[in-house]
Every structure is written in structure tokens, then in C-alpha cells.
Length: 53
Image 1: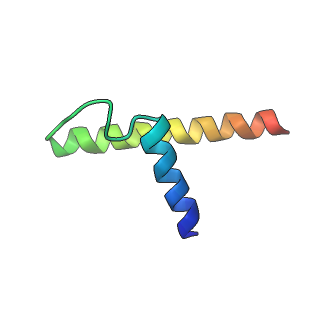
Image 2 (image 1 turned 180 degrees about the horizontal axis):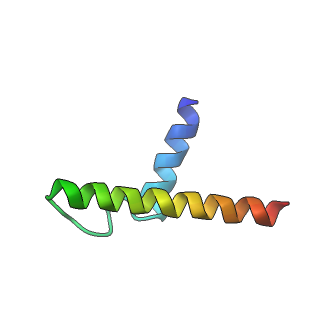
């Protein structure tokens, strides 16, 4: 389980722009950005599963 979490965060940081797209200091903006990155990951995972079978 821990390895899956590590892979998830590495993917988000490397490919989906977590903590790289913009710098904010407002807590609500950080939560919104993190949420959008998570939604991107979910949508890409769904699309990947559809293509595989």
C-alpha cells in the first residue's frame, strides 16, 4: 500500500504539475490546486484502463 502511495505522488509531482505549476501562499488555493491534480490523475487512470481493455 505504501508503495502505491509513493508511486502516486511521484507521478503527480513529475507529470501532473503538483507543486510546480504555480506558487501560492493561500491555503484555499493550495487545496484547490492539489484537488485539480488529483482529478487529473483519476481521469488519466480511467482513460488508461479503458485503453487496456
